[in-house]
Image (cartoon, rainbow over all chains, first blue to last red; front, side):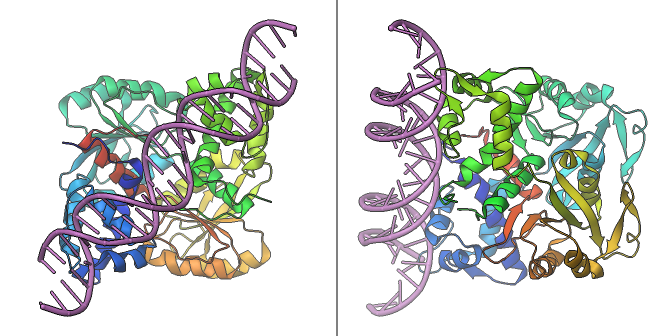
Amino acid sequence: MEDITISKAVIRRLPRYYRYLGDLMNEGVERISSGELSERMHVTASQIRQDLNHFGGFGQQGYGYKVEYLYHEIAKIMGLDMASHMILIGAGNLGQALAKYTNFRTRGFLIEAVFDKDPEKIGQAVYGDMKVQDIAGLEEYIRTHQVDIAAIAIPKEQAVPVADRLVKCGVRGIWNFAHTDLAVPDDVIVENVHLSESLMGLSYRLKNSIREKK
Amino acid sequence: MEDITISKAVIRRLPRYYRYLGDLMNEGVERISSGELSERMHVTASQIRQDLNHFGGFGQQGYGYKVEYLYHEIAKIMGLDMASHMILIGAGNLGQALAKYTNFRTRGFLIEAVFDKDPEKIGQAVYGDMKVQDIAGLEEYIRTHQVDIAAIAIPKEQAVPVADRLVKCGVRGIWNFAHTDLAVPDDVIVENVHLSESLMGLSYRLKNSIREKK
DNA sequence: TAGATTGTTAATCGATTAACAATC
DNA sequence: TAGATTGTTAATCGATTAACAATC
């Protein structure tokens, strides 16, 4: 796969295309041109065509793009055609919210186990009949189940050693909600969600009355 | 204020500098050079100096930067020297988690009221003695209280009309967790947290084994 | 066929990195 | 003063936009 050159910026835009295409499908729109999509999404038509052509020619000259086809193609590109098996570390407020969130599930992101070290939480049901497990059993679980992505929703001090354990067991995808950077080997992917930093960014822009430049 | 030109990229990096400087303070480090910080953060020293100089000369030639001073200066730049008064729309799983999250509070982001339309939830305590209020009273609340930022944690269909109501009442900062883009006037700032999209980005990178390019 | 719109190359714009003079 | 490191200008790199030939 010669995917060496696709930039972070393009990747970040893919889910947004996907969302708009889904909306269009729901509206019953069958075809759309980069120009029309451009107006809806407030990005240039040129960027849309450029972005999509990183992955292949999905359109048809003189016609545009078939909404449903493009929708499914983007899903494939993002790996949504196959379920992702997930575990969640941390059954605190945020962890509970993530576990209960059905939206991920419908997109094929399946949280199948939840771990915590707090004896008070262990054994509690989080979603359906899924119960919080003792984090001591983390390695054993990973050995016996497929784990594509581990979501980390614990305080930052604990996040680093837990990430190390995950990596050691061969987990290659980490969705990190802890307020720290995780040092991992090159073949492990970390996606950070730093809520405080997002809020600070908002605070800055509010204070300085700047809208996003792009 | 001639803040016209500070790019989104720089703003996004500010909270990260802030975090590292906080860590350094906790370690008792008093001064740091862009070179040392560069190694810790895995960004170029050049970028650090360039970024900081957008806001003024905080360093000293031949010496470096005073950690504590720089820390507080960045806090000021991001508006953390003054409390932000927040409200939260939506007392679902995610909303509850946000309301209970003490980290925001310690940084001066104060969630002071929570609204929901669900009669089951109205009246429930969320954090301390803060109870979920009927969203019917939203306008009345905003008229009688300062509201700098409203966090929106409700399904996307409801998010758009609620955002309109907020804007109409003069709220200028929106922290949007709903999976939709909000169309707001130019002087209103929206910071989006699209969790599904973050997860899809992770999925893509995992599937294509790409680490972040930057 | 004529019209429309893509795919793709070229031009522009902006952000990052390198270099170095200023200065503590 | 000599050494270190900033602030800032210049060079490079990459991403976005514009233009247009290819083609449905």
